[in-house]
Image (cartoon, rainbow over all chains, first blue to last red; front, top):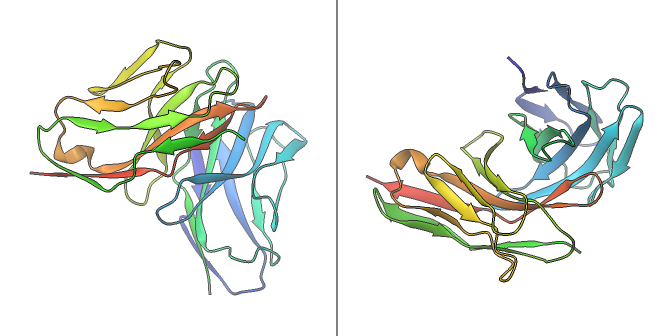
Length: 112
Length: 112
């Protein structure tokens, strides 16, 4: 089955530690995106990538970093510079043909 | 910048009631418009979309019409079910990479 996987589903980290969230897709989509969701709020764009080895900052990129070494993978690192990292993180992918984004199940990060 | 404004929730309805969730968007460019649904603890699922003015998106009994003159994309369903209880997000596409700008979401609860 084609889809987007994110792991782990729940992640706990101590304050000051970097943590990397995984996102993999087998939909052969060119574009991938990372969003952050806080309780009772909409999604905010962190980073996006249209092709391998290229990515752009979204609206709230500070304190985050990404890489796109393979078409299928777009990992997000939450660094210690992110002041309030506890949130629900969603990865998505899309093709230019449809423009619709398809989402993974999300990773809930809690920083203690 | 681009923005999407959604009717604030929460919305509570009885089963078989008529549903309307209002959504308006900023009119820059020629965006595609989307409705996504999120069940507790999960990622977002695409519910329906419309890519140009006067298009009607429909899925699972839900409908929304792209109204350029009123910059609106209201979600409707004639008879809601308990299983429709979820958070609904309106979104518009933005930018060359077709990033999505989301509304803040509307929590719908349907009572039996």
